[in-house]
Amino acid sequence: MELFDLVEAVDQFIGDRHTLPDFSLTLEPLSRRHRQSDEPFVQRAIPASLGALGLAVFALVLYWLPIPEIREPEGNPGNPPNLVQPGNGNPPNGPTP
Image (cartoon, rainbow, N blue to C red; front, side, top):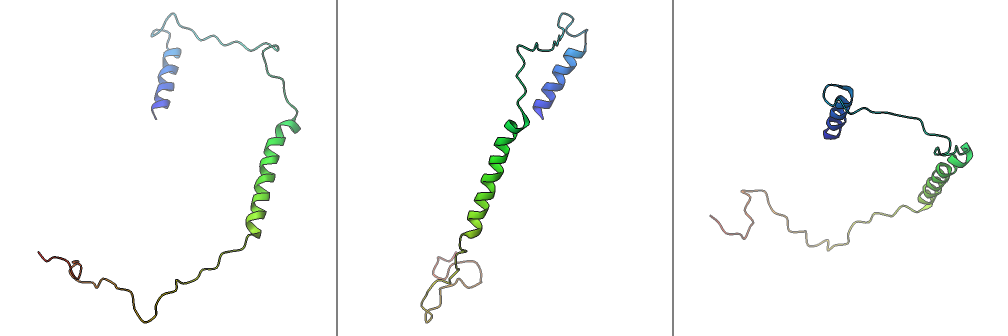
């Protein structure tokens, strides 16, 4: 939001001739000597096509990887785990107030 406010303030300073009377924005087109030459479409499309190809190859590699099997942890079936019983919120062997 602050960057937008800054750009808006600069725009108002440039647009208002009474605020900065000595300042004027002069824009001129670049000469052909300083302008970058246009690249053919094929040369501009090569990086995008290589990126898409890399993404497709990565997707195929992930597709062919096996899904890991989910196994329950092996425990002692005779001893149930110690669970905190619902109550007043104090631990079973904890101090009482």
